[in-house]
Length: 294
Image (cartoon, rainbow, N blue to C red):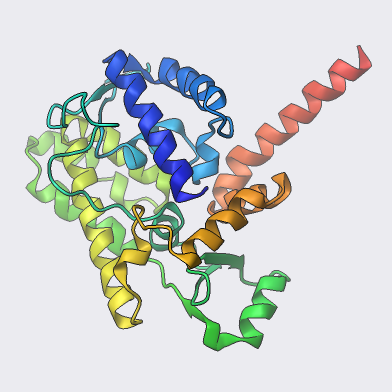
């Protein structure tokens, strides 16, 4: 997903929510699929951005645009525009204060703590490449043969990300009973799903947690960039179209469908693939097979 395509999706997202606010998550996704297709973009799917769930996409990509209200029980989220945003004269709403966001591939590289996944920054293109340790990979051979052209990205350890949760919980405006109810969540093996559970359990404090977590991740990304003499601007989602970034963007757009699938899978851990991707793929195969046989 190129940066220009991401910006286009954000503009459409803001336009839809501004026209109808609040809007349910299901309605918003249907509109987003329709509007991206109408605009000549690839049909929207949160998986193209590396997210397993639509709500995760909204909470991250739209964190500076939207307010998400989670139901206390079963049900859909309600999405509305942030009150602190600029008025409709803007091409799409932006926060009044400067908001820094990492590129999606950079965010995934720093926040996915899977120890088997190796992530490397390309000095030539500014792209981030992934491969799984223990599996044959042309990319691994390329990196090993030209190590001076790549810099490894060490993800933020799961223990540190769980510690952030506990630190936030200590200072959150919650009753002791509420804190005791939420406290077991950070003790689970860390994954993006655990973070979503924690965010939802916080209720109205969920927005504050997202801001807190984003700040912590940005600190780690800045430190890595400084230690490796890489301009932090190159990790930001609002990166301009320098020759290197333009080359990387064209490479993403021109990839085949299977290549894009490989990129999405590289952003998921083994549990995500086993619990979500494989069952969904098998279900699609069964449906297609039954349709042919009828």
